[in-house]
Amino acid sequence: MMLFAASSESGTKKRTATAVYKAGTMIRLFKVKEKQKQEAENATARGPLKKQSAGELRLHKDISELNLPKSCTISFPNGKDDLMTFEISIKPDEGYYMGGKFLFSFNVSGIYPHEAPKVKCKTKVYHPNIDLEGNVCLNILREDWKPVLNINTIVYGLYHLFTEPNHEDPLNHEAASVLRDNPKVFRSNVKTAMAGGRVGDTSFARCI
Image (cartoon, rainbow, N blue to C red; front, side, top):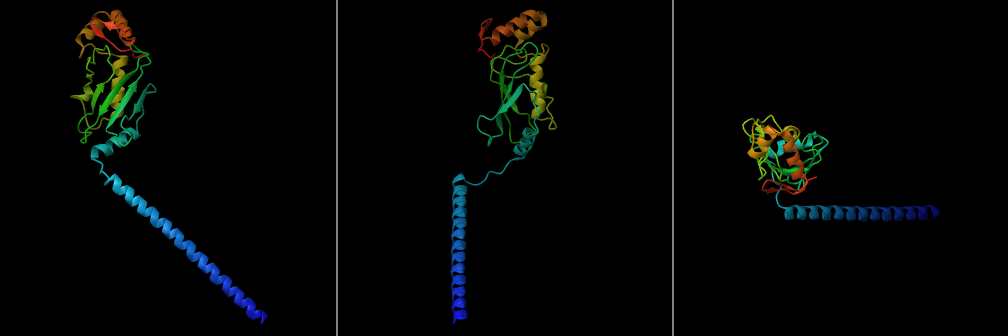
């Protein structure tokens, strides 16, 4: 009789354990299904995933491999989901424009790198190669652009404009003439403009 009672008790424990196990399994399956349902609803709310263009894929590679000068930074005003629009900030640490801060907007098309990015200077600057509307005279953004070039190349080109402005290929002809004929006056004009003063009839916002 004792053996029978022990056996009966053992069987009851096994059935109880099995029931608990099955209940736990069902609860876990229910949670998994609920999570899958929630993820599906979220995906539906977001809409179908947008397929990246060849230009976006190439730009993602360029940005992931950026090796900017220490005085340059990149930011994404629309968030990192929009890589095709970003800004580069340049703070020259030498030359006429040392101490200034200049912001450039980049707009990249879907056929990049077969077309150069559209680059504008958002900071009003007294510069022979950047006009007062922010248009930039840089050969690699125009006739010398090639698909093998990248964002890093452009940033270094822009940085070079501040360390060595070029009076021979100007957009701001007045600034170019002053740089060519009287570098000391040009330096003074640059300092005045960066400090938020006036050069001739043009007012500038402080950028230092």
